Image (cartoon, rainbow, N blue to C red; front, side, top):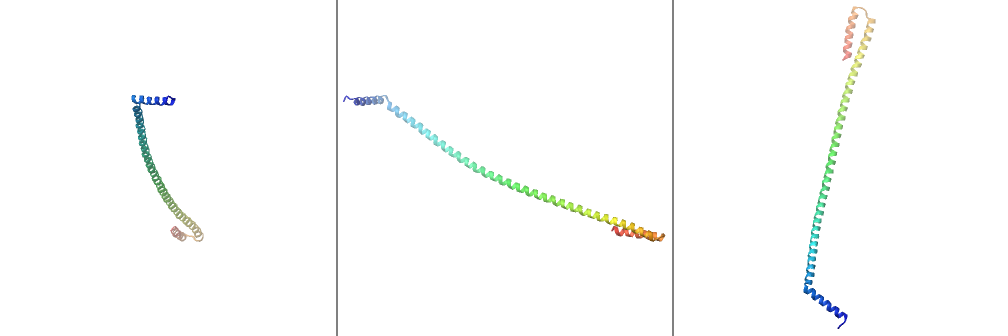
Length: 161
């Protein structure tokens, strides 16, 4: 009974009795309870933070989806506006070309009319001069002069018309 193990067991029991008498077990359980409360509080805080992070993530996903929809709407609107402007520009260009063509055709027609009038006038003047020369050479006297004047006036009026 006086072995070393016996004295170690007696010392251990005495130590436990002293710790119990001093209130060591209460302090240990109190410390463990305090630590458990702190761990529980940290777990609750971590759960709350995780829920907040999930809410922020959901909000981010919702905002990203909305931004993508808005971007698609903006692109579609820009595309429609570009098509409308291109069509409007094409219409303006076609109108401009049509007006220029009509103006050019009108100027060409006027030039043709003027050229025809100038050719007729030149032909009439040439015919009058030739007729006058021929009649002077063949006809002589006052009667010839009167006939010449009447004929030339008649030729001029017919060629001018």
